Image (cartoon, rainbow, N blue to C red; front, side):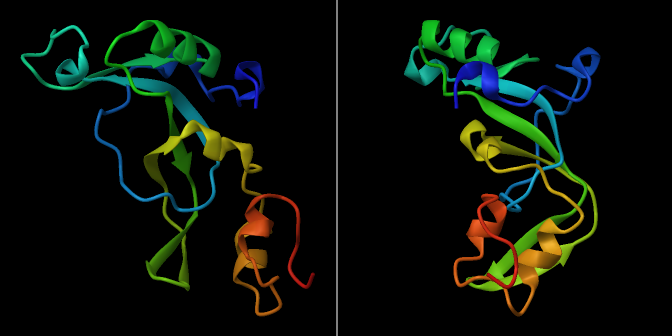
Length: 146
């Protein structure tokens, strides 16, 4: 994906207002991008503006976040803060559960290459006739029964 191909944030006026702590785990699907974050680490050479603690800058576009990360010593690659209205939990390898509660989590931005969740994404992923590689459904290259 080129920097300009990443999804827009759902509400640019809210960028920078979300809590720093987000839930862990990928959940496999996404509904909305809330902001793009670049975490900075003083122990890796970032300016120590938070008494030795890591900190982040929030951006409304991936392109802005990537440009900042490229020119900032001690910065990570951009992450996407996303909202999942529903998601897929995997408590044990290969054991998938449809979770129907909203949550906010950070993702590697490249995960946004997957298509946005639709009403059929999770049911198709969990269907008994899903393809052998269920991730192909999330990648948008298969549907259940293929």
